[in-house]
Amino acid sequence: MRKNYFAKLVKYMKNVYHIENGINKLTDLRVNPTYDTAQIIKLVLLFFLLRIKSFNELNLMIKIMNSENYFLEVQGYHWSILLERLLKSLILKV
Image 1 (cartoon, rainbow, N blue to C red):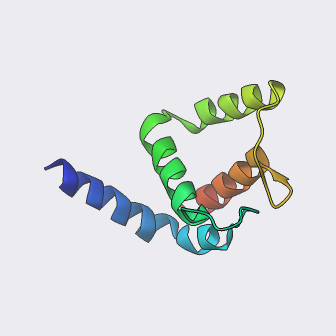
Image 2: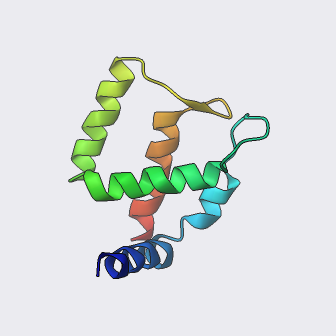
């Protein structure tokens, strides 16, 4: 039964948000990565979808992480900027 809900959730994300096109364009500077960047980003987004209660909570988490200097750079962009741009594009498409 849970597999059915998970499959529906993934299908919903693909059909409504159409984020695969943008995710597949993301790259990082790893040489011979074990996993594609797109696979990692999809898992992270799924985690956010399941665990974050609201966009306000996510925004607060981003501000806290920025103030504590946690960072991940992908092609020279700070991870919070990438996440913020992705969220804005998701919100605009809904």
